[in-house]
Image (cartoon, rainbow, N blue to C red; front, side, top):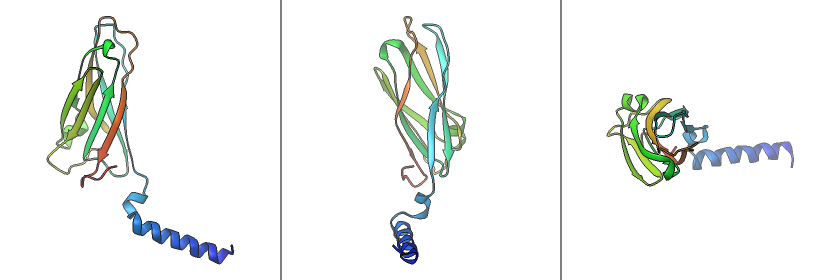
Length: 148
């Protein structure tokens, strides 16, 4: 292929992408959730921070599920963190054995900045050993409700 033909092909491809994928979606957008760690004796309670790290479009709402070994945790709950309350968001959680699913949203289009989005209070079972809590099904939406 000649250099001119390659340039025309590249231009055509760029135009096609711009039509089918608006510019805001072509930019690198990431929003990550990370759960801090802590140490406690069996039967003890720890508070973990669920940190939001944003690059690009900030989320206006978040949803996630924490999965843990049911025999290792006797109680778990979540509370809105500083970046969520600053944006006027409320947390709604539902739990079952070994899982807690949370929605962090509000009746506004305010977005959340990077920082602690939620705190998770975990009470270990009296016989608990090392316990892993995993984040699954994490979803973020922008102010228009589009997925990030």
